[in-house]
Amino acid sequence: MNGDPVSNLLTKIRNASRAKHPVVDVPASNLTRQILAVLKQDGFIRNYKPVGQAPKLFVRVYLKYTPDRTPAIMKLVRISRPGRRSYCGAGELPRVLNGLGRAILTTSKGVITDQDARRQRIGGEVLCYVW
Image (cartoon, rainbow, N blue to C red):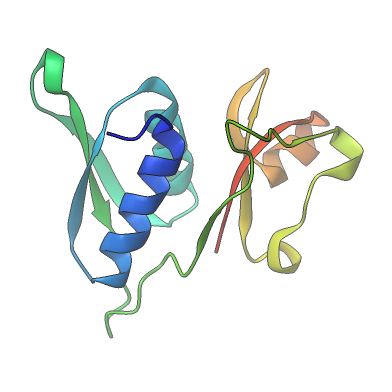
């Protein structure tokens, strides 16, 4: 397993989406569950649910596609990495594809999108971009 759970989550979803798999299992952590909740809320995935027992707990992610099998997630880009963190204030929040995409941030209020952070006027660590 990778040492960075966020990169592991994004890579597994990206690869499964390109291969047109209906589901993918990712190792569970509190941060990955919060990121998946944001992705579900914004309509990038259909659903997710925990599977397995305590030492080997996974989250099963149900990917979303259009009727012609085009993935709902076109691109996932990791921004803040363990070796290089990327923070931004409330006034300098990124706008992904002029508002069509989302930036996912971890803030003092939890994991939220850039739109919610603008509404609440808070900044934080930019985890990734999704469109």
